[in-house]
Image (cartoon, rainbow, N blue to C red):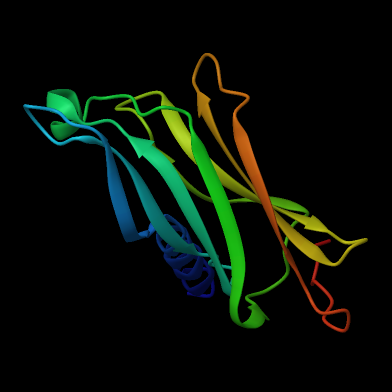
Length: 157
């Protein structure tokens, strides 16, 4: 019974990490059949740091393959994380942790956001990149959320 609560919390954190709220989108290429190619902007709340939201913009492939979910999205992505409320930590943080990821192709490609703790500067650094099973992409974007000087980041041992 004592193991059920931690497992349930981990399950809920995992599901919170993958939930995105679409903020908007713009079309970049008109397609006669199927949806247009577009850039979408989504908001992700950091599940372990309350008061921080990450805005992710990324390319979404349209056309027939995009409509049926078999297209491979481009590796282009950008991230901007901001403090939107009082910063609250849900437990201690590891020095580096995947905050969320989302599929960018039917099988082998993912877009990932990783949080890193910069202890010296008292900041949370967020990196977005894409990877593949065989070969990833060096394209990336980084942003940081500085914390007030009096608010330490609780690090996991």
